[in-house]
Length: 389
Ligand code: BGC
Image (cartoon, rainbow, N blue to C red; front, side):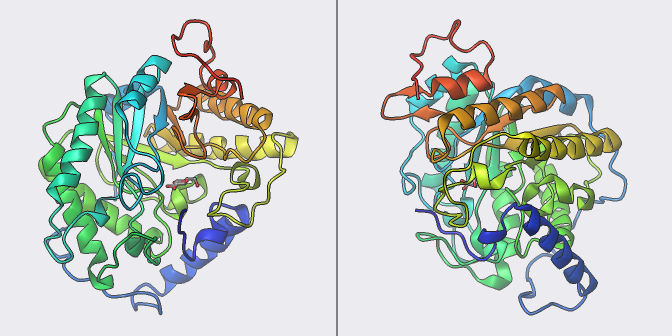
């Protein structure tokens, strides 16, 4: 079961985006004095922000990385659960074999570091957990995959109640904790292949409104660059990392960046039956002309932003819940993949083997139709036994 707090019902929906934009505006006006939910933060002085007034555009390294990442998959619900296994899936070696056999080039690896560290500064990471994540990162890199390791689901940092199984945190120290976690993670992984990318935070939202997020992102970049001067880093904007708030993102003055966005429109289709979105009832199909238009629009907005700012994009998440009918999931998945690829964007489908999954863990086989939608040559040469839905 998944625990989502106050942002849940608005999540990524168009009404929600509009309401969030209005809320962001209100928060920005009142930013000098903390509002009712704003808790003053301690311990930030040690982490000065890098400048974000003149982002130079991406380096050749960043553009080449984006191109090489191609098609990818999220290892979701594994390390982003409060503990590995709590959401019913662990990172198994056979999954890595399956990813390689399918021809994916990238794995995005969400990690909830914040539930595996000390309770007070310096928020020391639990060695056993860090070792376990490192073991999986090494195993993925050893197979030649790109790995986008992102920091995911620190609910107190988002201003939400902890998930079941997640520890409470001192609300005055959540920003410091976020930065001190990056100090340790960046240091631990600094010697790895340049196929390892760090992603600063998944879907900033809640108390991470645009202004606060821009500041924290700039501080986190300072932290990461102290130990990883050239590693390609993935960043995203506030409002769930969607495209509609991209224009509010202040890109740090740094060339080695990819800019991620997540795209789950139409939400009532992709999230039908998801227990963390009870407002979306099952039975919605995809994709009629109106739905297809919604899907296309977000790509247009993202592409226009990328052309203007000269940073490559990464579609870090899209996908649909298994409560949706399979034929519609296939149509939707193909449509998303085609848009991303037509715009030259690498992508990572959400996710490998849970409720949005492309892989059926019981059958130890991929869902054939979803894989055909993702990989145009699927079924012609791969060695895995594909499964009919
Ligand atoms: C969240 C997942 C969720 C998915 C689809 C992701 O960003 O981290 O927990 O399942 O979006 O809603």
